Length: 409
Image (cartoon, rainbow, N blue to C red; front, side, top):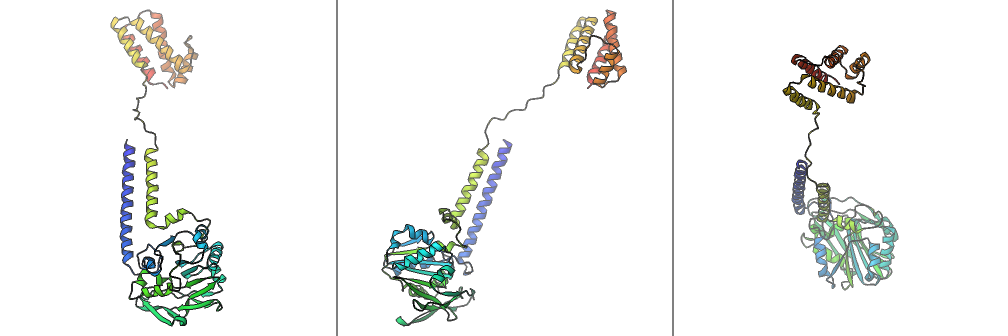
């Protein structure tokens, strides 16, 4: 019962620590939400912090005829294989992430999807080398930094529609740009703060790739400053507003490294902080349940006292009985019989002949001086031959026997 109470106290303490950590983390999240630091932008459609893309995602229904936006949470190859609508022309697919980690199968699916007449918009800081090679473009990766003061971060140039405008804010500045493109199929649509091309359109088959190397133009911080929402409208205006389906990719924005193995639904659950906390809390509660309920319950078995050797007490009781009758010889005889039985059972000695050899053997086994053993045996002989025993002799004989019982091994 005491151990069970200890376990319960420990479990309660652990739960309190978890709750305190959760509350502290929630406070930290609230502080992060108010922060304008964008070094770790998530570009997630559900993130309302400065580096999230919540505003852009919520603005999409106003920019396209189809007001229903489908969120994708799996790799492109998996989505393309399962989503039958993508095998037909006239779909818009928007992907915003810090770095695009794709597999060869993803790239093949993207190329096939666009070639049949779909439009794929990619806005990333780092494009996958395999995809860049397929589109015949080269990228120079520049450093990203946040100046903290309003700075021109993105320009849009298109002579065909007389477009020449720039947008600024005090958030993160993207420095990557295209150093080489296939001019036969590729058109420059925008440039970075240094005037280097960072927004292009690549015609492939019946559709187009739109690649922007400045995903910060989709962040909440950028779109909510001044009239920068127009920059989002400008970028997405190249895609048909009457597309059959609008897809927003929320998978690659959560990828921090190259994909390893097959994708599982577990990754989707672990990607969201609230769901991740709920899962770990469920695992902890399951472990606590196993800890407390896994042990077999039963009544506490009371401790039993060690069995005592009551043979000496029995002898005393019998002796008192005979002493009251004052039959000293009979009592001495009974004491002798009990003594010899005790020697036989304890030391495995033959008591038929109480001679010198017996005295020597008993002295060794009982670890008692030989002279004391001889004195006791001589008293046994004397009592057997006397026929009567006085009170003094009986008392002395009793003391010698008790001394033997208490001082032998």
